[in-house]
Length: 398
Image (cartoon, rainbow, N blue to C red):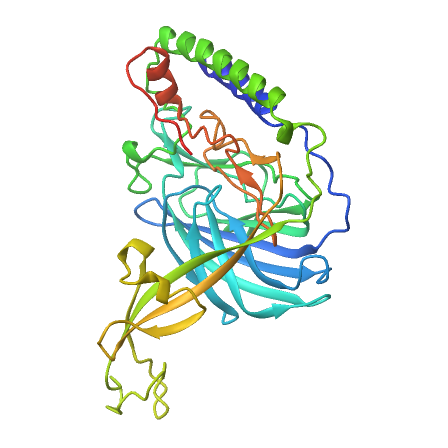
């Protein structure tokens, strides 16, 4: 009964917090022809998610050619990531407005070109122990969706080893359970749930995915009632704020041209003075040995502006010597991103609704990727309960 009440509350919250989204009036910029996610469970119960995407450019005039994309991943617990295709110049994990993998390509792609790229992510906090049945662990998974992009063909392949059951009929092929389909712009793939015995992998209760409560727990009624009253209070406050703010009104510029901004990313790069393969001396500005092809790079480390001496010297794209050491440089990368004025749509209620699917997916796209938790609540169920009972104060998030 408690789970049912919480589910209803979350559904109401989703509908209440997300203002009506206007339909994008222009023609689509891109389409995704293939979107394949292969899932392998590791011994530590984390998931290796391997992505293969074939992305076609339909329009390179409205917002320029395709140079980078952001693809939503389940949650912030991304343990590692790696590019698998040579056309990826740069890959990074970002939590700006959600959890994403950002891909920068090695060149710009123009109308009618298709960029095929592959990468892998190791993802943790994806399961729930004893959720419905004592002694069983369940993974819930929904692929990231794309608000403004049609997906012609989507496939999820899940390694069938040790799988006890699943919630949907699947095709079994070469050791994998396979689900496939196609998605209209903004459409979500139906949730996949896969069940294992608790001893199948190294499942740990403390790593239960955020947003699901274990069936072995015993929530008290007072906590649910407190949550209900606090929920109603939050809805009233947000409704008042939205009604008084012109930027959230029906006349907001959802179709306005995105505003381009620049974020500066700096990497401290240390080079070997000589090639570690053949011993040749490193020439000025050389990245690889001209004789044996081995990289001269000893280490790379991202640095914040506060860590850089005289940061004003490192605001242009390129690689610059750092200090007096001839083998230490700062690589500066200017990352363009777009902000759509008064965009009020939220592509994912999972981030703000604690009892939603454990896979808090986000959208991805070329310019102005979909935002999660638009109102910046970032509240988890237990925090809300504690706040309702006066036991803990939750700080506001900017």
